[in-house]
Length: 345
View 1 (tube, rainbow, N blue to C red):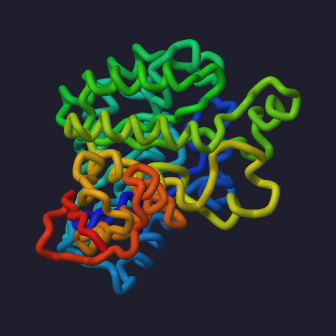
View 2: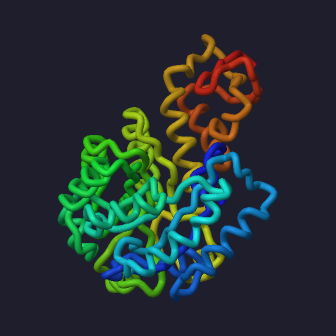
């Protein structure tokens, strides 16, 4: 249910694939990403999703559960449809089963009138599909909005008291590592409450797939995407902006043979980035005992997966950096998170 790994807030997603979207962006296939066919989503669907979530043994009404409308441009839906979906949540809010609503939309699809409407229906968080803050990249991707639209919308949302999220897509047509990190630096100036990073992959059936086949688009490699996302997370979180999602969520249709044609995709992309971030942060602590050829690393138990990394890639990185073999990784609850101790083995 939760899409960002939080133990405190449970997010119940309701997908509205491409509904309200005025364009089909070159990379987009929301039906495949969400494993949900296109079609009108109404109040009954919302109630069904919420009832199923409430029956889950993981559900805790005291967790501050949040209903999230994803996958479309919510604020471009007809007002009667927005009202239908939001009012379907109202009884669950009244009973205290859920506590708020979040939704995603385009940067050019918010205005004072629609924000007042959302506010009156218990929406607290709005995520903007900004994707990039480089106008050339946005034009190449046929987004239909500008970086300026994103900046103006963030300010407008702040003025109306909403929490603001930005969704970014490194590796779009015309993008580069340098351009994307410039986007990240501009995001730092906007100070959103949260960010998601979705590296661009080529999905069958999209315009991007046709461009890829014709040699008009070259996707980023996995290593480049991992490095850029690692640096992005470090910059954002050092300024107090949490990155709540890294990489597309896996779904049965997305994982079907032939659906992802190219690009930096693997199931553990987010974990790999988190491990790399962790290693960058503990690097100053990797002081090996003099002449040690074999070492033992003590670490807080919760951080062992981050230290080890994807397929023990983190261990290999430590060995390369220190010149010593890691004989063992020992859980040590006396160590604070983010701290390690290196001993001779």
